[in-house]
Picture (spheres, rainbow, N blue to C red):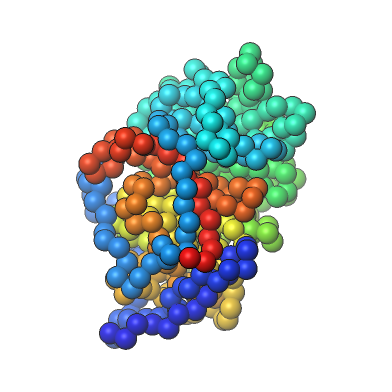
Length: 405
C-alpha cells in the first residue's frame, strides 16, 4: 500500500509536526457505531490488553519528554499555581502535593473526608482564579455515599467545605475532572456510575458536564433553568480543556466500542447509552474523534495552540489531534489503516490524529497545559491495571513539549 501523503500540524510555537492526511481505505465504508447499553458485548474488567503501535508511523520524533517527579501514588488531579508550580492529588492516599517544575515534592494536605473505592477517591482539583489572595482550591472526591465538590483553603488548618453533593458514585465511572473555564466558572465532569439511564436524565447529576459558581450554584447562561447541567449523555468523561477561542473539548471513556474526543456545546446530548462513537443520529452530537479501547481509553486532554494532546490508559500512548476546520464537513468519518481511529474531517479536526509515546511510560491519565506552553502528564501505573505492574519510578509526572527533533 502506498503511504498517504503527509500534512502539517501546527502547534503553539509555530513548529510544524507532520500528520498523516485523512484518507479512506480502498473499498471500505465506515460503519456507524451504534450500541445501547443492553446490546454491548460484555467486558472482562481484568483484561487490559492493548493494540500495537500504529503501523503508519507516529510522532515520537516531535515529542520531547522529561520527568518532573517520580514515586507518586496514582496522581489524578492537577492544577497550576500563579508561580508556575503545581498541585496534584493522589487518588488513593488522599493527599494534595505541591510539585515544583524542578521536581521538589511537598505534601500540603490530606482529605480524610474522601474514600478510596476502586476508581473513586481524591480525584479532580482546580485552583481558584483568585489563589494569590484566597489560597483556595476546589476538589472532587468520593465519600461512602456520593461524589462531591468542595472548597478547600490550603492554610494547614481548614477542612473541605462541600459546595455540591449528591453526584452518583460507583465502583467505576466516577468522572471527576474539575477546571475553571475561560468564563471564570467552575466545570465538573461526572460519570454515570454504571447506571446508564442516569446519563439521559436531566434531574440526575451523573453522566454530565456541570457548570457552576464557586458556591455550587447555576450561573447565568446555563442551558436548562435552575440546573447545573451544561451537557449530558456522557458515560465517563475524565478530560476537559479549552482552546484560545474558548471552544471546550472533552475526552470520554466509552464501553466496548469507542472512546471519544468531543467538542462540548451547551445543552448538547452526547448520546450515551443510545449511541457510542460516531453514530450519525441527528438527535445526538457526534464526537470529532473516536478510538477503539485497545488503542485508547482516552482519559485526559490538553490543548496547545492548534493541537489537542489526548492521553490513553489502556492504549499506553498519546494522540496528537490537529484542530480546526479546513473544509466542508466530510459526510463520512475518515479512518486509519487499522480502522481503530476515526475522525470527522472539517468538523473540528483538520487532519489525521497521530500517536506518540507508545508503551514508553505506561498508562497515561491527566494532561494539563502549563503556563510555559508545555503539557504536564501524569502516569497511572500503580492502579493495578498495567500489564506487568509499575516500574520502580512510577508513578510520574512528565513534561511534554512539541517541537523539532
